[in-house]
Length: 370
Image 1 (cartoon, rainbow, N blue to C red):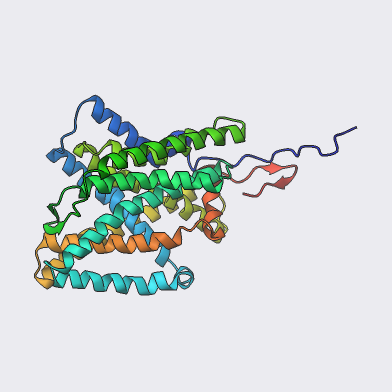
Image 2: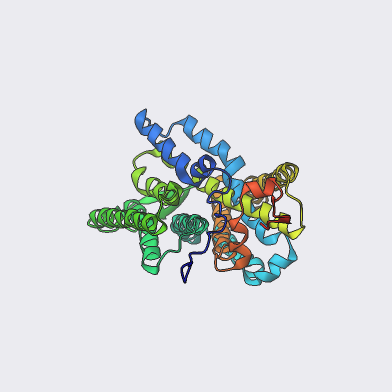
């Protein structure tokens, strides 16, 4: 006699990776970990002119396009704008007003505007790291408990705490594109506190990973921990390596572009009912990337040049204020359009490259649905 409650046969496993284990590992943060290891191995901590030039050149093809990709996703259709009317139509004017105020008051308002940006920026890095980790957990079929999610967020934000403590521990006047701003001058005892908090929460996240493996009955892909491990290197482990810190925005942008590119292709395919094919993937990838290279250059190179010439302001000053404004707008938009609670976001993020390249194989005369 069959058992009263037979175990159901498991369905096809959801692919964990967007592209391939090695590609996802690299772009989700693994490349930054390997790069940091190479710098340590060859004892190259110095921020040389070549390092600065390489990071600046990479900004054109990775850093800046990642900001443009956010605007493209929000403003590519009226449907999207209607879905997020406050973010799409009101926030840009608020940010623009703040930018104009900072340009008008370089010694009073501009330093506060820059300070806001420099604190919000690493917070945004942390939010992305948490989001990418949750996406990979969902793709791996892992349902995390509330306390496990709190451990993850605590670990990631502990790296932000550590970064801010080291940045603000001494009262000093610092500069961003020639704009002077003040550090907070936090007490020195914050340093050991930050080290303890980061160590404890990191150990807690490793414990969570072991529990997830036990719950799943298998060794889970290490990519589940890669974003958080990279975050630790970015904000804690690599602090004394200026040659590495120069490339942290580049690695953050790579992580973002992997997710945004995959979502763009999946949504375009489903929205227009396009048959999967290499031609579709290559053509749409080229179009999307070209648009975002152009958009990034417009936002970070051409508009600051025009603002500087039109307003008669120093180029460094105009560039610093405008870059801060573009990124603050980016932080607002990203906080809205990537909510995983929305099925319109979560569902496309379950796709992978294979289903974009090849039509589903027929099973028993009926085509499987992606």
